[in-house]
Image 1 (cartoon, helix red, strand yellow):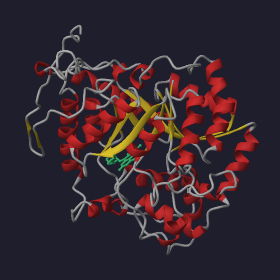
Image 2 (cartoon, rainbow, N blue to C red):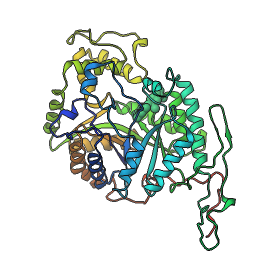
Image 3 (spheres, rainbow, N blue to C red):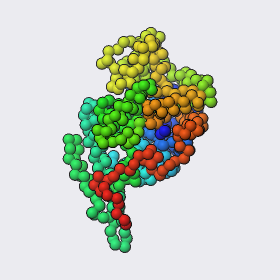
Image 4 (cartoon, protein in one colour):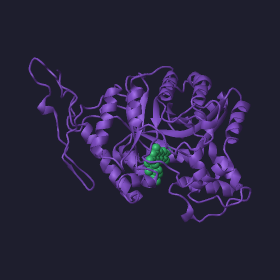
Length: 447
Ligand SMILES: Cc1cc2nc3c(=O)[nH]c(=O)nc-3n(C[C@H](O)[C@H](O)[C@H](O)COP(=O)(O)O)c2cc1C
């Protein structure tokens, strides 16, 4: 079972940062990030994962904006910069950063992740996204976010170029031989000379081939185009589903697409996002849940619900039923529709609906004693709902510490999770092979 730690400075609950156990002063705090990385590595986690965006969100939702939610991002580190620092204080754990294909350039991204892979000794991963927040466009000389089709067309070409650039040099291209005066072997480099619909990139990259050949590629889109891009190009998918049935269907769907690209099911790992409230007892987990709920005012809850469903909720009575909203009022992702579906099916009021989504950003939630949490994780894993989990703690760092102290030993006892790191690189630990070089497929020549 793969375990990834969502390493954002704030936990997944909107009220989290006000909790007595949460970090003090979490805005861009390096000391906290170092502590979190060390905690996750001591727990033998496969990787740290940083979601990201390029803009401050929720300026139009004044109560939520002032109180901040985990995805507002008013004061976060640029993720590759942060992971470069964390590479120096860790030895085994993978370091995965989100970078968008919509507002970046393939050469710059190939270079940045090749560098992180060398700096970390082969532990880098790139979470390829097409950007979820439309407002980010305004920070990149654009008037509007491009439609999904255009973003995915660009993303596919972008990923092919990045992989090609990582193959610019054979693994043995840099003899750096003082005696002969040959720094590099000119027969062991290949320019890319890419000319396509969106990019023209000559190459070669000004970095040696990454330690892992290619840093591990994550992707996180769940539309038809997002799934197809994952099947064609990703090593791991970060997926969010609220029920085990939906997660199984997505798992089968994604793995079923692989043969078309000559890939086997083991070549794509699916990590399911989940917020975990683990307690010594079920009652302890429930108590934390309640404490967090009490830290969110109705105004913040309403703004948060508005954000998730893409419709302004401030004018609806708190204890009245959720309105029946037409589909066109529902925001850009499937999440809004899912929330409205649950509210309708269960006859929830507005207040009950926002409370339902506060703890897990509308994703999945496992809450209970260590045994109960381990049982659910085992059920999801064994029934092919996922290959592992992207774990968010409700309160950081204590939620992660508690998970490692209570649940990890139980997973180890069941033979579901490692007791020590198997390999040197992130690929080794995930059980993913090192990709061949498309230009120099033969093994490296002896020096
Ligand atoms: C689980 C998950 C995590 C995501 N993380 C990010 C992120 O950190 N930053 C970002 O800009 N977009 C993120 N996205 C957005 C996707 O890259 C994509 O742009 C968005 O989901 C729309 O594409 P889709 O319709 O294929 O899902 C995420 C999406 C999902 C489903």
